[in-house]
Amino acid sequence: MSLQDYVKVLRDRWRIVIVGALVGLAAAGAVAQLRPPQYTATITFMATAHTGNSTTDAYQGSLLSQQRVKSYVELLTSRGVGNEVVEILRLPDSPEDVAKKIKATSTLDTVLIDVSVTDSSASKAAQIAEAVGDAFPSLVGEWEQPLTPNSAPAVAVRLVQPAAEPTSSSLPGLPLVLASGLLAGLVLGVGLAMLLNYLDRSIRSVEQLGRVVDVTSLGSVPFDRKAPRQPIMLTDDPSPRAEAYQSIGSIMQFADSMRSRKVVLMVGSMPGEGATTTLCNVAVALAATGMRVLVVDADLRNPKVADYLGLRSDVGLADVLTKRVPLERAIQRWCDKAHYISVITSGAAQLHPRGILASEQLRLLLEAVAKSYDLVLVDVPPVLTRPDFASVAPLCDAVVLTCRLGRTTSSQVERAAAAIESVSAPLICTVGTMAPPRKQVRYAQQGPAAVTREIFDSESTVAGLDETVPRDREAVRNEVELPNSNPHIRGRAI
Image 1 (cartoon, helix red, strand yellow):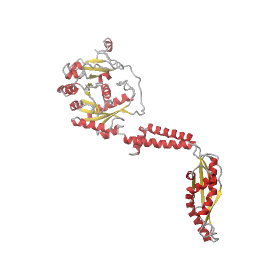
Image 2 (spheres, one colour):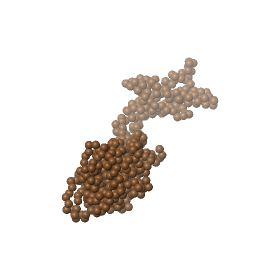
Image 3 (cartoon, one colour):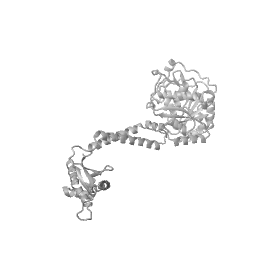
Image 4 (cartoon, one colour):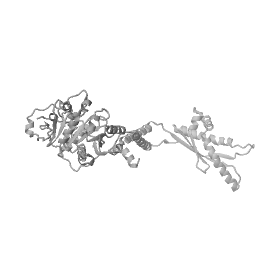
């Protein structure tokens, strides 16, 4: 991973880093409040060698003392010293526990030994340090006693700095503890973010999507909390989501890969990716540019187009394919100001939807509408949940695969792309949906305009498709209002 990749991971998972920092800070604060006080008393020993008066003897004595100091540092924390302290002070502690409270250090190339004793009681720490100061020189005298009787020890240790009772705790102060906890929390948060990124197999950007499926990307649609309540965006809506749909529509119009492709299937890998919402909004955006757009809801299992657009669902594609109604009777219109899209909803519920979609009638229908519209957008169930797409995809000129960024995994996209290619359908483009929002700077914003949405039955046959212009709005107001399953869309029939 490059530095930019690490920065992107931290930017995407900044909440985890913040939580880690807060946890570390809280833990440090709790430790600082709950820890018992610790006091440290110190003493200092100096080791000296008994040598002659010559310079050579003095030098050799100095070397001997330095060599002995290394051993004394180890002996000061031994059980023997602890046992002497326990006997002197008559402590209830074991020699091992006392020895653990003693720390000894020595600076390189010196004969000084610094001893520190730490205890929760300041007076007890000072008492143990004094006892060590009394006991250790005697122990060294016994250890260094030569075999020759009445001879002086080669090295002696004497106390040069006695113990004093400490007046303040030796533990780090609250600011230092909090800073350490914050730093540890940040390290933990960053590490956890990197671990989750390593374990995360979801696709988080259109760039990553392009590496998984090597086709053109039409862009991405930002996540919008209002989408479930307002799935369809008006063409004059200045929101980032509306602008994203308009951008995708523009790319579909002018991209080389989409030229001469009139029947386009837009499908997701898994449910909940927003494929149907994206299809409807792109259709609205393209219609605003003057294109004649037809939306065909071929999802006969869980249709959503009629609900999103507020259209009738009792007559639609299933009825046309089973020859219960003619095609022109199944086409409705959804209007946004002066622009409209034509829609064929799913129609009546069917027991065997795949068998209906696999009939020759669907191919004939798509061929007929392709001659009369600039673009036909087809909606089907997700690729990896139902096999219905296999009946529809080969009849389309292009397939656009949607991917919910941050949730759909790379393996799901790969399997969906392989399934599309297995039925010889041309996978041309991809679209990322529900992308994490980013701050955007707008050049200008316009206030929302009052928009009347109307539904019209087609008054012309598809063969010539000389579609008439909808009647004026005064006439529409006098018509009977249709039952509407979507409370956010008002529809009227003519």
